[in-house]
Length: 248
Image (cartoon, one colour):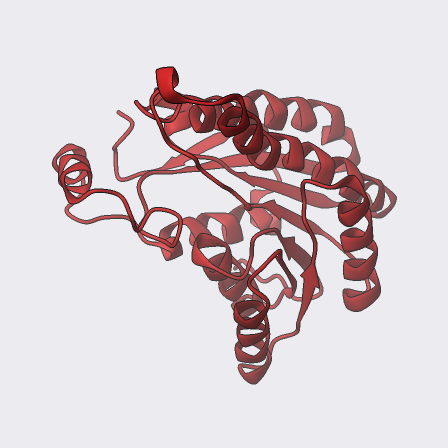
């Protein structure tokens, strides 16, 4: 079950945090993996070596997914390096938290650019390849704040909420081509992106959880592996909250 042998996946922001876990679990299930990074070249190369040492196949692809020309090159390099491209995981993310009254236009635009616009660019670029194959999986990584909102995250919450509509539009457009699109909404997972969150906020989140632990990157990547598999072929346009009940 969940055998991804013969499939190739591209994970944006794949060198660190949740993206790193996604790359590793996809590779463990047999997928060849393209690890996209923008700045973390050493971490991307370290992950590539670890995947190959475990018997998998991986390449690293440098690209700023906010730039159309970088995205086009990234897709071409992935197909050239892996021979095909079946699964796109739009994982790259960025937050710049502050209250609305203090939020600058730059704060708003930069968060929107990476968390929403880049997803559009990457998805559009990869769909041509998937349509030729008549098989594909687009898996977007959102956030529970995109459903519930969060004080100090108007920009981030708006961008992640936008992924709901975008994902469902892709699902409607591509379903007849055997391409699915789904959205995974993590709760608070401690990674490089969230490690500076104040302890009192973390404690408050713990009190609201319905399970007795915080989430891990592996909780998220397990869901991605399932959605990338043949077993999930009848699931599309869905929003899957992986948050320990935080959003209820």
